[in-house]
Image (cartoon, rainbow, N blue to C red; front, side, top):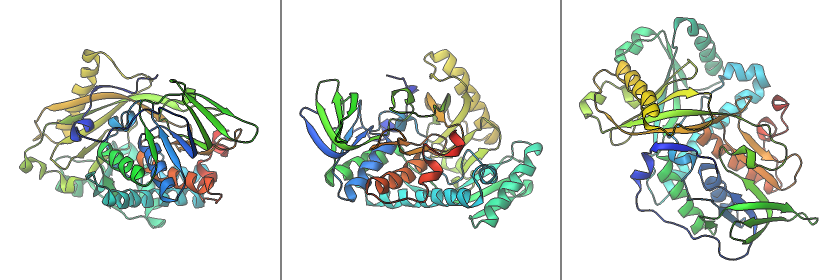
Length: 409
């Protein structure tokens, strides 16, 4: 089993008492078996049960215990691939359609969060996306024009405007409105509770070790403990573990990233952080920063082209210390130390889009894999696509993010 993160995670400390679920102890027959109980799997199960489709989540460890625990909870409609680049890649209509779906997905996550019994700390936010250097300013202006001309809620700030609102100055920045922050750990546990209340079967400590499709089209799964599941459809929502997938899947690029969370900051010091906006940059790998409801700061970045998270405390601390230097370079008044830090596996696809849809070679097998910095938003989009496909309906984004798309060939 792949180690997805190392270090001292923050989000699990925000909901120490939460519902747990039993391991599968007997045979099971459902319409849909969802393998994985993170962001993608839980939202899929929630939407499927809302549609009256019998569903089971089969989680090898615990709900929200994988990549979700290392998720930094930024919900943004802008992507790792700029709209202007995506237009060149897949055409204007498809690119704008995809970006519009991301705007809608942020809103839909908020609508779900409002219904949950667990407060997931969802708050609308705007983002400051700044040019890291003068050389990157023309591309940023081009992106602003692409967003503005296609109806997205954006503004452009010149250096004087940036320095008026923040204690740092940059060559220019796009302000995107319509983003949001969330506590992903609390959100997923809330979604799981709601899915279970709607009839979903949820099993933790249930490791699926084999998958066969019979001549009649049924899918037979077997767990490490010997329990068997029969399903009409199977959804793989297993995060960054592509070697375990069935059929032909273009492997993503797996890197590692780093993140840290400060102690609660003095409220007066956070007054220098305009509207608690998200902050990120054009440089790659990029730095990102956000605040939390209680006044902490989350900062992350420093991606490295190595798949496995760093185990050694000393080596990890070197990267975390760099994050602290970058934080104080932006906000010199924030001198509160980090209380949590971690290294985590981070996946990207070849064309910067998620893997969503039916396996080209195996009917009834679906992938719900939100690779990229917008994984949570992609999970929301993917859940709608897969629910529609399973229900026999088409979805306008299916060809854009499907596994047979031309950009993966």
